[in-house]
Structure formats: structure tokens, C-alpha cells
Length: 67
Image (cartoon, rainbow, N blue to C red; front, top):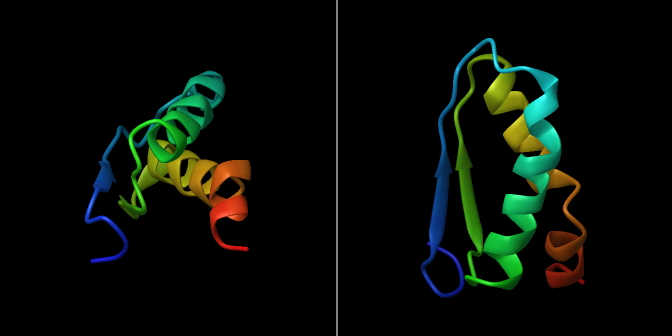
């Protein structure tokens, strides 16, 4: 475990539409800045999991935390 022990898990549908990405990216930001989540676990199957991984990897809040 990292940091404060708060972990967020993502699991979603393999056919998730790209249109959910903006809400997903906003949720990642909120969980980092508002809830103090320091670790994310993402599945490895399908569209939703790829979008979740992308949202975490390019999150401005996450990059700021890692400086």
C-alpha cells in the first residue's frame, strides 16, 4: 500500500463508449484531490479499463503529487 492507504478500484464493461471518459477523468481528479486516494487499481480487459488507466496516468493531480 502507498501513502494514506486509500485505494480506488476500477472495473467496467469491455464495450464502454468513449463518451464516458470525461466523467471518468473528472472522477479520478476528485478522488485524488478531494478524497486523498493515492493508489488506483485498474483491470486489464476492455474499453472501460483502458480509459480508466489513461485517466489515472494523465491526471494533472497525479502528476502534481509525483513531483
